[in-house]
Length: 345
Ligand code: BMA
Image (cartoon, rainbow, N blue to C red):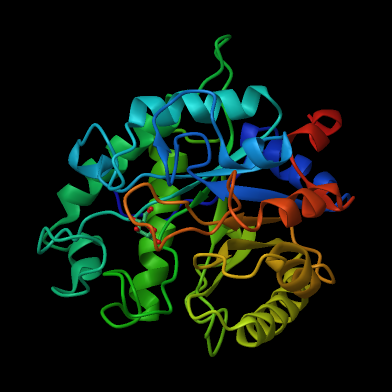
């Protein structure tokens, strides 16, 4: 294995085409996204052709989020039991209908074997060049690359995606987080991941996203560098039914991202968001949109309507009290869904 740094190049890759498209779409409005949209809702799972978003407003989200956790161990389904074969089909389908997909990754702790939320064992340093688990990391990246490189249309064209590894690194909850990883180690982890995937495995169809959690002191503290990042993201949730704090966080963080994004000429995005269980009927237009609308974000990804945990509901669903308001939200000109994406293919 080589540890040398290589610089990025080539401008006509599927990644560059997606980035160009994202920039054009950003001028039209904010793409609305939903994690695991076409694979399950709270009361259904694995049925094909379904989507909570579509069943409420008649249109698919512009962005769909999917999760890779578990793929690195050779599992057939991810940590939320979504089969990777199904995920591949849905990413391709979303691309063919003019939409975009983004991928997160919550890999298992490579030292303890527990899940991503176990920060013990100083795992990042063991994965890096010269570390005891360097070979494991190499293997993991190979497996992820196989999946990513299998994202192809029926006529063999690569499907570009937004790749968002090692997210919420400023928090202490993940094993790649600030509790167990120094900023330098983190940067090395991100850069190594980037270089292996793009150079060793030819993944030229990834738009890379850096995505801390709200509450940062210095947004760029763990930033790996302009050559490795295309989108500056932020994850902001409301877990406590506290609209005022959510609004304050959104305004604070997106102001900061707007400033840094302008300076660096990078897109910005709300890479995970939502109000847990959506207790307010008018949340989408009255809380979310009022907070977000002033900022030039590319997309907002609402987290999953978990089939396996009823507390985790972040998106309107048929019959839910937010459904009528979501239809209003859909009609706002600047909220973009798949039907708004067709002319920017
Ligand atoms: C988290 C939660 C978990 C889930 C994980 C990966 O934010 O939703 O329940 O397993 O994302 O999707």
